[in-house]
Length: 430
Image 1 (cartoon, helix red, strand yellow):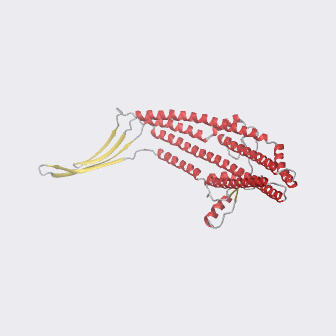
Image 2 (tube, one colour; image 1 turned 60 degrees about the vertical axis):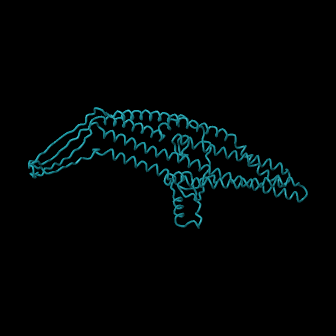
Image 3 (tube, helix red, strand yellow; image 1 turned 90 degrees about the vertical axis):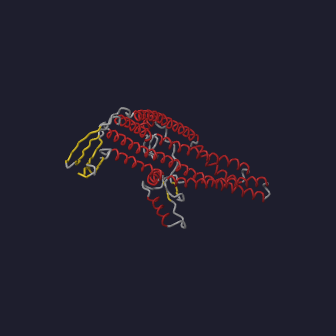
């Protein structure tokens, strides 16, 4: 894991090259490792994630509904015709052939088209907000997995050092036994410690590989893509501005925006249901020929809403709107709770991180070096080395765990406040 971020830019060119490599070279040649920053990972997920793409495609479905709602007349004209002979007498002598042809059109007079357009526009905006919220959740998952992969790589480096020290300890124990200065118990203890260190290193390597596979999946890349996350885990940015973050969340969260647009669509549905209670007149024009006479007729028909006044749909539309309003209020409370919980976890992680001040970190680094020197000089016993080594490794792993917890809490708070994962909790770019 690199402490400083390697230059990468805002594009995703290296990842696109990886896709080209996979499609042209084949499985026989191992693909090159792709350096990856958090910014590049987020950009790649926006472009390549199947879930993000599916969410964007749903916008097209809602746009189609708006196109259908914008049609001038919802019903097409009715064209009808009839023809037949006119007979008379006992012999059914055909006198003339009569025919009639006519066209009719139903018109909405309650403003239904306007309500349909209003509902479709609100549904389109809700679909856009839903796609934005899917992307927000994907960004959070990418950021968390990116940080987890960085931490897994740092843990592997740490355990590699632990394994190296345990191997040196095992060699010393063997030499001491051969020189008659040690005991078989010391050698066995050192051997067990060395085996345990190797086991932990192998497990850490598998976790790192699994993390990169999961990260590639989130980015919409082949799982076998060899990713090399570059950067460092976030550090303490200071106390976040909770009130500002909460205000932003309630104004900018796309899921809350989508819920509001859904309520607006439900309100338009109420207007549509009320408008459909009005009778829709139909105008007709016909031309006929009877016994050689040409006849033009203009007619109008109006249904009488005596029994059905669209009572059921009107009642259902109002109940739907009330339910959606209650769900929106519940979502608002959930957003407040989500953000406040994330900030509490972040504050807890900050407090834990402050325990690992400069002196503690310096002592951890010095202890590893002192172990090496003391072991080589024969100033400390093997059992003492094992105890100190375990404490040092646990301390350094604890510091790494706190850094990762801080990164995850920070990512959750940014997502809850609807801020980009590349921003800070003060709402600014780092």
